[in-house]
Amino acid sequence: RSIDLKDFMKKIETKFSPAFTEKGMLLSVICRESITISADASRLEQIIFNLLDNSIKYSTAGDKTTININRTKKHVIINIKDTGRGISEEELPFIFNRFFRVDKSRARALGGTGLGLAIVKELVHAHGGTISVCSREGDGTEFEIVFKGETESENNTFG
Ligand code: ATP
Ligand code: MG
Image (cartoon, rainbow, N blue to C red; front, side):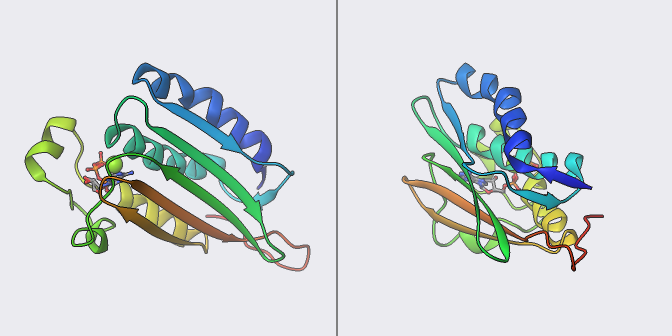
């Protein structure tokens, strides 16, 4: 199934903005051109939801999350960046592991099981994509998801 990311992200922004506003945060989505990918909409939404859920949980009032959608000749890039608490260098390599959570006691108070990012990684891989992360403690966190772009000769249908 084809998804127009511009429409899709507009819906995501409308749907998730209230959760950000409620915490005194801001969500903004930037997608300048119409970009299409072959994907399952509900799975793509789960990927985005899990990442935005983290942005909200690990940030405080005044923080900001930005989703940027871009295209190169062969790839579609989804970048999700927040100005939240960030992740230390020691812990960053483990965040995609199942049940891994930074600072167990504080994390427990925030709720969750440590499965969110493991699921994100699995879903991205199932769709032939890759995910990477950059983060600095105190500064914020940036996730980049790269999918193959849609071409007529190629079939990269999700799931
Ligand atoms: P769940 O997603 O199952 O509710 P969780 O959020 O703790 O629980 P993950 O989403 O897998 O689990 O994230 C793993 C850990 O990585 C988190 O506990 C948190 O410490 C850290 N983390 C993830 N995303 C961010 C982020 N945007 N900013 C800061 N820390 C993050
Ligand atoms: Mg999570």
